[in-house]
Length: 194
Image (cartoon, rainbow, N blue to C red; front, side, top):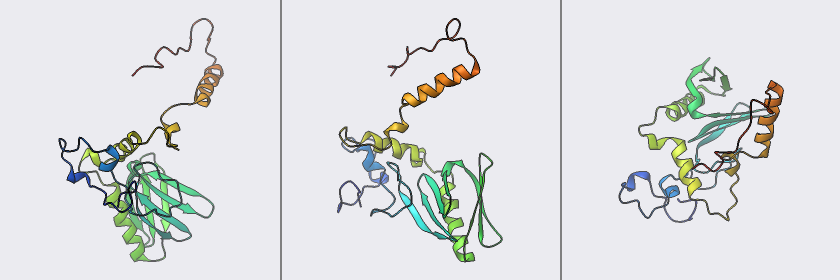
């Protein structure tokens, strides 16, 4: 179902050819993974669809088209799928995930069958996509373009830096001891570059 228009089936990417998609919004080409509003333990980004949601030992685990999210009692693990290098099952009940930044994540399950099922799901999720359009970045971009101007976009701040970024940058220049009066200067010359 299309989350923007309940009751209307969501179009798949395969239904549109490049020339036949002229009147279609980009967000319609990249539909969310679940038809109904999923009860997930995190805020879903635009274009992100939760594909699997379940429980591990003392944790809630979810896989979307963008991330693996594991919520334990005291902590949360949130890793983009493209950051994962490998995933394997160890000691029959433990999912062992190695990330590209050398981080290791372990998640325990109560049964071997449950561990194997999540291993298959995660292996499929981190596999190299068949087409570049299957990458999350395309879905996110299409959904962001489809947002109305009046509609509040909770993730717009990710695309443009605020005053806090400029302040941190200036504080870093001071910390590093750059002489901003004589040799170095910060310029806004490319602020409006398109």
